[in-house]
Length: 157
Image (tube, rainbow, N blue to C red; front, side, top):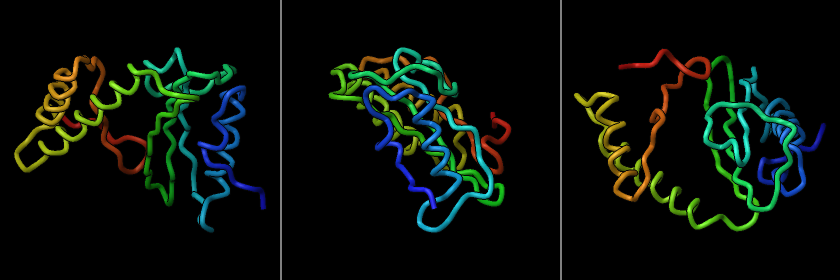
């Protein structure tokens, strides 16, 4: 059995995005804790300066000191998809990235506290946007997406 590598072990200075994703995909296929997936969703990975674009795939770029890396992978078992997104920094994160992280956490917490019967997806997104703006940032992209069978379900209103 091939040795499995976690993303944090292969995302490091001097490694090509393509090589890192190859190791990550191998781990997804072989599985962890004795359980392999039954399918594979295309992983998304990008590093600075392309991190503003969501859901793009890896390139031949090389991770460097100070890089921000966005990774979104998914476990797929019998058609059900469970995505997870992580952001990595090589070396110490910049002050701006730390502030963006704090704003995103505040937005997530505001969104989660808004979810209840009778609220729309728009209500939840607006709560997140307001929390992020209070910390000095403006989110100009969507605020999440529904997940179910396959990577995404048709978007609710």
